[in-house]
Amino acid sequence: MIGKLLKLIRINKGLKQSDLASKLNIAQTTLSGYETNYSNPRFETIEKLAENCGYEIVFRNKKDHSELTTNSIKRLDV
Image (cartoon, rainbow, N blue to C red; front, side, top):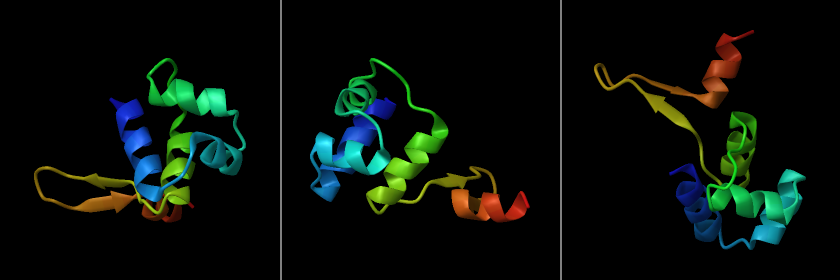
């Protein structure tokens, strides 16, 4: 599931795997492995990928609809 999402994010940004992999400081084959679900990226890698493609990770509470973003969590963790 995460692989399809990562690929969609990259394609929507108009980036080739090699371009995004370079920005993430990982091998193109590693990114390919993530996109095909051959391997799973660490959360930090997903966060960096989203940020490089103009996306923000949001955690939404289903019950009260409150939201936390990775940026707000970092600020709360200090």
